[in-house]
Length: 261
Image (cartoon, rainbow, N blue to C red):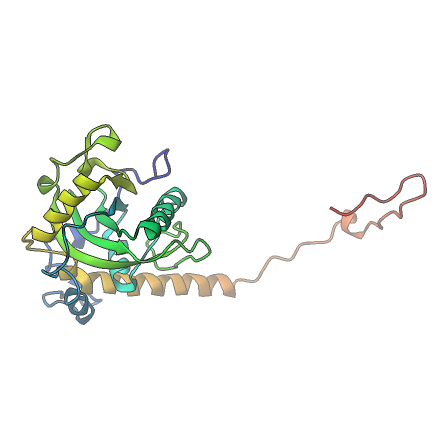
């Protein structure tokens, strides 16, 4: 995380050996069976995204770049139609969503995994932030709040397709050099939307959904085992001290009792 409360654009969770392999060739399962066929969940998602009749030229909309530490969290967002950001990012997105409700314009989120050199999809915000909710599914136990999203596009789009889009509200930097929850103004946002809609992709995270399903299952089993071990350990009992056994002096007339806080 950077000093402004967003993700550092160069940091990502360390890649596993499998993640360094091409899409669709990563291994899943304890037996190492190759994920050559798309999982059933991924097929259901695929039926709902990358639709040709999507309105890719809205008159008005809000756009933000979302940076993720890992593809594992993008995988979970696709499964559960949810997302969470840093405290600063949550506040920024929550304000944008509530403002958009007055004008009726959608809020679109362009997703990219740090240091991946690509964007991986676009989703629409479907709710304000529930700051009291915390999902336990994320790769790191540090993201609070929760809001609903609906995925519109799921496709790998190289940064080279978007690098020419520069943001006047971010010192003229390329959109590919954005931090988490960086807003993209209307015209460059609409240009990005057109690219997402029209780009003929060859790969997407859906190709590796079985791999990430398996990783999630194994991580959850590890968490359960760790919790079970912690619950089984006897709790240390505090030995009584002289101070614990000392009587409490009654207040006198000269020294009245202090009021309760």
